[in-house]
Structures are given as structure tokens and as C-alpha cells.
Length: 327
Image (cartoon, rainbow, N blue to C red; front, side):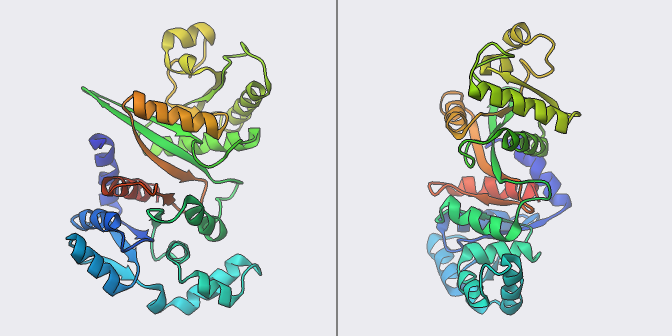
């Protein structure tokens, strides 16, 4: 685990403690992570589930969750207000009965706890699919003003001797083939996310072409997206289109893209599509010895994140800290 980065996030949470909803309160990985969080005072877990089942699961797995809030949709005292709030949010798309039925499920119930301010953020997906975590978030939390899409970012961390490398990569998980305008949003959101993790963002729009060396529709897409992103955020260091070697090697970058403030020094990488992004972050993870944290969902009005179903308790703990740090 990237100790330095996580210590910084924990220090910021100590100044402003948060509450996080776990939608799968009986999962042993969630319970182990919750037990660790309960040992501190800076991130309080809310476990969704039936109280006796959650406590029995914790007992069986040997985790002390004394002090955790357990919330059961079936017995939640403010359910009528929650149903009413959800009916208004769904604006004629769901009846009160349909909302009440949906709120029996941890993903919808947990998302409404965030919407109503009971919790600051949510982490789900240990047993739910990504779609089942993202759908309630889109329907109830919605995208931030000015944002049209939800995108994602991986924070990549490699610990070296006296030198920690922290990078941001997007979008490697949500948008399959983003348009130019979507790539602008992805770039700006990834830069904001990078800042939270101590990265001073230098954003490279990646391609198989550097500064006009190659031709093709995807080259044009990345060049145009980069130009629009620069216009939208002139204060940020953004450049492209560029090949990966030009983005990370100063000698190659300055030879192929002389004078670029990013070429050779990039730390925030925007991929042309999910194919490139997913392959790219996994190469860094498997061959470059980077730890990958994510996908961190971007563009929503509140931090809601998704676990992979193959996650372990350490990943749940790490992602809980990351999610709360974004709140």
C-alpha cells in the first residue's frame, strides 16, 4: 500500500471526519475493512443490512464492529421521507411503490443516504455489478452542474527508494468510445482527481501520433479534444496529441514536441478509448509494478465508488479512504 499518499489522505480526514456507506454490510471483506476504520475516528462506516445478520457475519468472521452504524432498509425510521424524496428525484419515472421497492435494496438505499446527507460518500460493488452501483448514482445523485457524463480515473502508485511515483489514468473503465467533448470532460475531471492525490497535473492526450506525426480519425479526435480542453482550462498544463514515450521521456518528448510544457513530464494520461485505457493501466500494473486504485468515479455530485467483485479487504479499506477524501 502506498503509505505516504494514504497518510496524507488520512491526515486530511482527521481534520474533517466523514461517514461512508457500505451497501453490502454482511460481506466479510467489508466487515474487515470496517473493523479497521472503527479503530480510528476519522471515517465512520455505515453498514447496510439487517442488524442481526450483520452482527452474526462479523462474529463468524471474527471482526469487532462495535460502534458501527447498521442501517436496515426494512426498519429505517425515516423511510417515508426517503421514498418521497426519491419520487421527486425520479420525476414521474417511478411511483412511490416502485421507489419503496427499490429502496429495499442496499444500492438504492445507500445512495439515498448520501443524497439526504446522512452519509458523505458510498462504496459498493463487492457483490453488486458496476452497473448496479452506477445506475442509482446517476438517477439520484446525478452529474455535477456542467458535467454531462460519469467517467473514471485510476490512481497508479509505485513506491521506490526515496521516490514515490503517483500517476492518474482515465478513462479506463466507464466510457467505451468517448467523443471529443467527453474527452475534454474526462481530462478536466482526471486533473481535479489527480490534485486530490498530491499530483500537480500535467495532462497528456495520448495517441499513436505525436504533434501531427500520424494521421487518422482517432488522431484528429485526440488533437481536437486537447485543443478544447486547453481552451476550457487555460490554467492547466495540457498537451497532445502525443505518443506515450513522448509523454514520459523528456528526451523523446522535447525532440518530437519541442517547447511542450507536458511532453516528457506527463503524469495524467487521457486515453482515446476504453480499449487503450484498460490495456494501458493493466500493463503499468502488471509489468511496471504499479498499484492501481480505482476505478474512481468522476463527475457525480457526491463521491460514489465501485469495488471489483474480486477485491480483498485491503482494497476495500484503501478505496474507502480514497472515496472519503473526495467528499
